[in-house]
Length: 448
Ligand SMILES: *[C@@H]1O[C@H](CO)[C@@H](O)[C@H](O)[C@H]1NC(C)=O
Ligand SMILES: *[C@@H]1O[C@H](CO)[C@@H](O)[C@H](O)[C@H]1NC(C)=O
Ligand SMILES: *[C@@H]1O[C@H](CO)[C@@H](O)[C@H](O)[C@H]1NC(C)=O
Ligand SMILES: *[C@@H]1O[C@H](CO)[C@@H](O)[C@H](O)[C@H]1NC(C)=O
Ligand SMILES: *[C@@H]1O[C@H](CO)[C@@H](O)[C@H](O)[C@H]1NC(C)=O
Ligand SMILES: *[C@@H]1O[C@H](CO)[C@@H](O)[C@H](O)[C@H]1NC(C)=O
Ligand SMILES: *[C@@H]1O[C@H](CO)[C@@H](O)[C@H](O)[C@H]1NC(C)=O
Ligand SMILES: *[C@@H]1O[C@H](CO)[C@@H](O)[C@H](O)[C@H]1NC(C)=O
Ligand SMILES: *[C@@H]1O[C@H](CO)[C@@H](O)[C@H](O)[C@H]1NC(C)=O
Image (cartoon, rainbow, N blue to C red; front, side, top):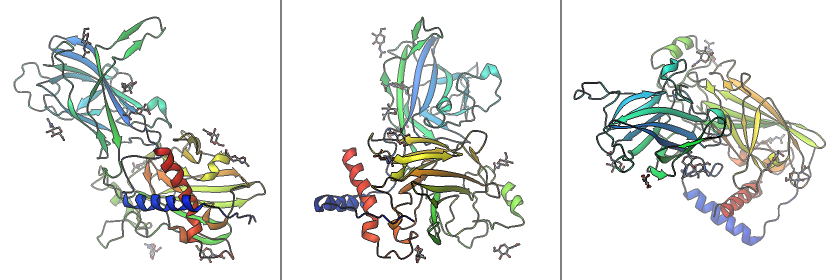
């Protein structure tokens, strides 16, 4: 068993800076719009006016998900805006407005006459004559790192009463993106250099008449969501299992139906009963009440390596998580040697610290995290090479610094509850904070 814990030396100045940083960070809401692990993450909406029509134009609107690990899963995105003038939508391909609105003034019936239309994707299996490229995935928009080929969605729209020159056409206002709930905030549309399109053989270029872009960013704070996942810990060197903190995602109240006992006999009737389309999770009764638990087990200690087992468990009866992903931060990701049965990508937002990794399932094998029940979990093992300068089992070093599931921060147990090495001192609090402090300092300096 390795016991080569080394004291981490922190000069007083750095320490006081660290304290300041800690003080400030505790004042900020933990779920600010800015995501330090994906600082440039955004969804960009690009609107290309391709052709003039008798009273307007034909445009292709595309959503590019430039977020590394946050995706939009079923039931999918909804894109809304407010027209600047009296525009209407004559027709659409690859998408549809959810409501037609009042078209009573028209002899030929438009697709949508609302001042503030809301567009959804079409479903897979839509007839070919209504499809366009990158459409018809039921609003699912995968993340850039995980599935770049499916991180773009497009629809085509024929706009009337819009003006037919680049001087008379006006950009819509107040874009909204729902996923399908709140969380995204969109900026104003900006005119940009018209998009250029290349013919398949690359010998001819065409370009849009006009192009404008809108950028939308996500914030867990705006989404007003309580946490959706929590972390539990265990190790081979201590048989204590540190469970998720009680009430991480909510507390069990005595209302019937607020959660479901795992062995409930009427489970299937409740799950398939009414509210089936509800987005609210229907979770198994646990002390943490989270739909997702991530368990990090320090499994084996070899001479030059150490091994971790990660288990993700779904406690939500109402959700199969397709294309799920985890983001984990631990200094040893610099020395990751092998990962079994998950995909891996190193996220390196600041170009220096290589301690953050994105993990996700292998297609058709474990990329679908099934609803709560015997199949509702996925597992992987990671083999890390020991770096003698940093490696230790003491003071909770072997446990992750933070974990995200599908882009949402998971609730961690308090550091003083981590399993310790037998005969280690229980009073480890101050030094236990050092790794966190170091990360904070590094991040703060890099962010400036
Ligand atoms: C959106 O993301 C892309 C890709 O990361 C980036 O190039 C662009 O600058 C971002 N836009 C904004 C407004 O942050
Ligand atoms: C509109 O078209 C004219 C002539 O092609 C061009 O000079 C001008 O820059 C365009 N304006 C915009 C806003 O695209
Ligand atoms: C657009 O949003 C702004 C700010 O939220 C609001 O003041 C304005 O009334 C909205 N415009 C329309 C047409 O809804
Ligand atoms: C507009 O969005 C497209 C697609 O994301 C991107 O390629 C282009 O660079 C953006 N233009 C500007 C000026 O941000
Ligand atoms: C369900 O499990 C709980 C605790 O595990 C037990 O007390 C209860 O009797 C079980 N109910 C049934 C119907 O098996
Ligand atoms: C999850 O997927 C399985 C198999 O595809 C399906 O039988 C089940 O109904 C799905 N559950 C939910 C809640 O969508
Ligand atoms: C980060 O570490 C991993 C595993 O050692 C390595 O594969 C990857 O190339 C590193 N990335 C950078 C940017 O250094
Ligand atoms: C672990 O990674 C760090 C940073 O890349 C490197 O300096 C160190 O030599 C690596 N340790 C081992 C044992 O590979
Ligand atoms: C295991 O860790 C817990 C703290 O989580 C501690 O209370 C317990 O004493 C440890 N067990 C041993 C055998 O050291």
